[in-house]
Length: 217
Ligand code: ATP
Image (cartoon, rainbow, N blue to C red):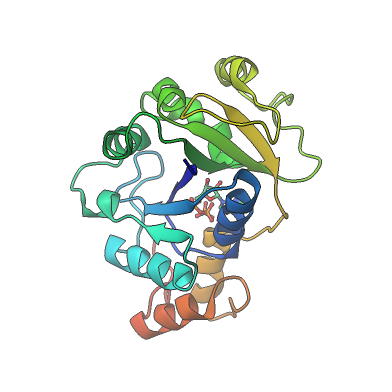
């Protein structure tokens, strides 16, 4: 059974850092599919300023043409705050208890995990793959909260070993791409060029819809 990747984010907008993370994880973990799940109302970040429908459409355009990537609209379609634990519970119910799932996270998101709703349950629902930069000593570093360190030391998996449906943690290095959605929004707000930081199809949509054209406070 080929494992499935689950990749959540605000994607405001989606950019090549996100796409490369998904691509490298898909290749490295042998994922049959990566499911991008744009957040509706992210509980930890305040409401994203761009309408969920636009963020969803940008993800659609960004992944078009990659048969391994798919988008899942359940969080943007929900009126409730989107907790990852609820989304994974729903996916688990749909896909069955045997299906290996990999929750894909950037290192920054991973370090914030203990603030997530019922975060320990995430380890029961999926394996967790953390994308770090070469040389990052994330898992030994003092920056990791103790409670997270404890979970990781029980669960950390050697690269390449077979995984079960859930419960492992894997740190994988990825090509460092210092691209952030915040920086893209700022660039666009001052009418700068964001070309080559995100797919042209997404940038065209942004211009068509006049997203990020003004600073909002
Ligand atoms: P912002 O700049 O507004 O914080 P973001 O670009 O980090 O946004 P999110 O949608 O919040 O985008 O990120 C979704 C996931 O992608 C998170 O797990 C985050 O760690 C990861 N991620 C974002 N940018 C990169 C990048 N350049 N390289 C690797 N991972 C990234």
